[in-house]
Amino acid sequence: MPDTYDANTRSRVMRAVKGKNTSPELLLRKALRAHGVTGYRLHRKDIAGKPDLAFIGKKVAVFVDGAWWHGHPDKWWLGRSGDYWDAKIQGNINRDRAVDATLAEQGWTVIRLWDFEITKNPEEAAKRVIEAVR
Image (cartoon, rainbow, N blue to C red; front, side):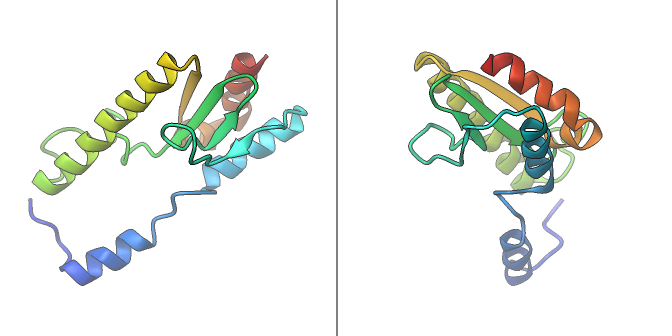
């Protein structure tokens, strides 16, 4: 399926997609603060993959992944949205796995949370992070 937008419209739509401080990220941070968990750094460029939250001393990297953008099997599958998006999303999945491997080699624990998991139950998502940090 070809893209339904012309190049200018697609560019405008893509520029509007937030990459930082999304609603699920903010919900997670709020839930962590409610448990007294602080000390994380946001979007550190010096850490592979620029994790959404990084507990540097504990070497825990937390990523909040959008289900469609990062290829959750209930939201995206090969052939669903056309060649362009298949390549884009598959590239994101491949990059995520490479980042996970790089961080693991460097001794980091990687936590990947789906955006809809956090939106549905921020408390449970925060508990997963807290377990890794403590």
